[in-house]
Length: 219
Image (cartoon, helix red, strand yellow):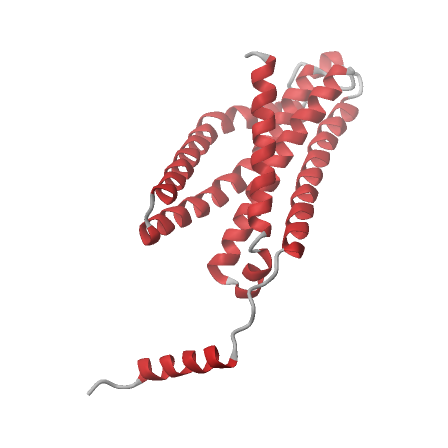
C-alpha cells in the first residue's frame, strides 16, 4: 500500500479520535450528574477515543523505533498484535453500545442524518467484529509464541528479556498516551461547556402540577 495512503489513514483515525473525545466532553459533566444510559454512552465514547489514540501512538512509536533500529521488525509486529489484543474487547463492547444508541435515536427522532449515523455505526461494528473473528487467533498465537520463546527472536536476540521489555514498554507507553490524550480533551471541553441553567421557580411549579395531574386517578 502506498505510504501516502497509510499516512492519510493514520491522520483520519487520529482526527476521529480527537472528535470522539470532543463529542464526549461536551455532555460529560451533564452525563456524570444524570448517570444511567447517558453516562454509559459517555464512557463508551471515551473508550473508543482512547483506543483510537492508542493505536495511532503505537503505530507511530513502532515505526520510529524500527526506523532508528531500536526494535526489530518482529518486535514491531508483536507490539502491534499485543496492542490489538488489548484494545479489541473495549472497542467491540463500546461500539455495540454506540450502535444500539444510534439506532434508538434514529427510530425516535428520524431524519436522514440519524439513520446515516446508525448505518455507519452498524457497518463499523460488523467490520470490527469480523476483523476480531478472523485476526484475533493469529495475533494471540504470535504474541504467545514471542513471549513463550518459540519465535525466531531467540536466534537473533541474545537478551530475550530485553526484547520482551521493549515490546511491553511500547504498548504501555502508547496506551498511557492514548488515555491521557482522551482525558485532556474531555476535561478541557467539559470545562468550557456550561451546564444548562437550573429551572426557574415557575418551571418547577409547572412541572410539579403536571406530575400531580398525571397521578390523579381517572373517574
